[in-house]
Amino acid sequence: MRKQSKTSNPFRNVAYISPVSEIISNAFQQSAAVRRTRIKKRISRERKLYFLEKDKITTLTYELTRKIDSIIDQFPWVEDIHPFYQEIINLIGSVDKIKQILGRLKGISNQLQEIEREELQKLYDTNHPNVMASIRKATSGRYVSLVKKAQGDVKYLIRIVKKLKAVPDFNTTLPTIVIAGAPNVGKSSLVRCISSGSPEIGEYPFTTKEVVFGHANFGLTLVQVVDTPGLLDRPFEERNLIERQSIASINYISDIIVYLFDYSKDAELSIEEQNHLLEDISKEFTDNPTIRVLNKVDILSKDQIAKANEEFDTEFQISTLKEKGLESLVERLKILTLDLLKTKDKFKDVAKLSISEEFLLQKEKEDFSYDI
Ligand SMILES: Nc1nc2c(ncn2[C@@H]2O[C@H](COP(=O)(O)OP(=O)(O)OP(=O)(O)O)[C@@H](O)[C@H]2O)c(=O)[nH]1
Ligand SMILES: [Mg+2]
Image (cartoon, rainbow, N blue to C red):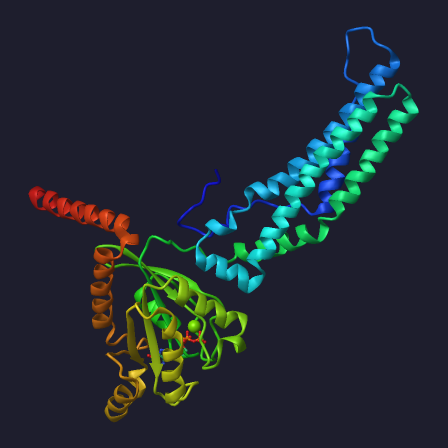
């Protein structure tokens, strides 16, 4: 059985995948290094040659199949991996294509063994040194042309794994808060304020180009806080890969969504667009609590704040720059998280853990007071 880690990027542990040219040249090197084995029994020169050619062929088959099988074996079962990573694969390449490639590789590995069986039989049936050498050469030729068929497929796997390894780890067992909104509204600034995540903050829109995970300790449990690239108000088909990553994290990993609004003069999207964007992304996950937050209140007048609250129906008013209003937002997030722990089945393990942590903390306190 293949092991699947619940807590991290399933592609993190995929080791180096050799390109086909390297697989072939290594196998031939190993096969060329095979020397006559010392055979004590007195046997004919032809039989000795037979054993040598046989060893060369079996070494070649072993080295080729070993390398090809290792690609297949270490690749995570695409169906078993978390939907978020499946979605990311589909953004970068295609889950179906990976499955087809792995199937084709398995086919090649099996065919190598079939060819080996056939050719070893031919080798066994002859006593002629020249014929033996030509059988080995013919086998090598069949192997090379077969394995070369995988060249494009293996190149594709190498490329996709390189990209997938760069996708951040996230823990599927922890409650996850996704910070979403239009470009430049202050999403990364909020993630920096309330979690260990340290995404880049820029004065220009589209600073964040991939999802960034941070953590926060909410007393009873650890939560993940996810920064996402800014979204424009447009249909999904027109979204670029970076925006689609945001949508993937909202759709597949969020338990709570914090949606930021910007009413300042720097806002990238109009009031209507910001409202419409939220409506659009909310369609997919109506059960997830969504908190509407007005950011940048430090540069808004009281009047503007009142108007913004009306236009956006915002529940919290914050300034990530001046660190204002964050306490009550975090308080709300803690309450919602506690609720998730109690009600959502997927968090029952975390909930248990949290309770024991709480117990430990109490014990520490008691011990400490006793010492005094
Ligand atoms: N005045 C003011 N500026 C803020 C506040 N929060 C963020 N900003 C500024 O807004 C700009 C964008 O901040 P980011 O945190 O990078 O915004 P973002 O939503 O992550 O942006 P993208 O990743 O590009 O979508 C930066 O210049 C911040 O300094 C705030 O509360 N008040
Ligand atoms: Mg950002």
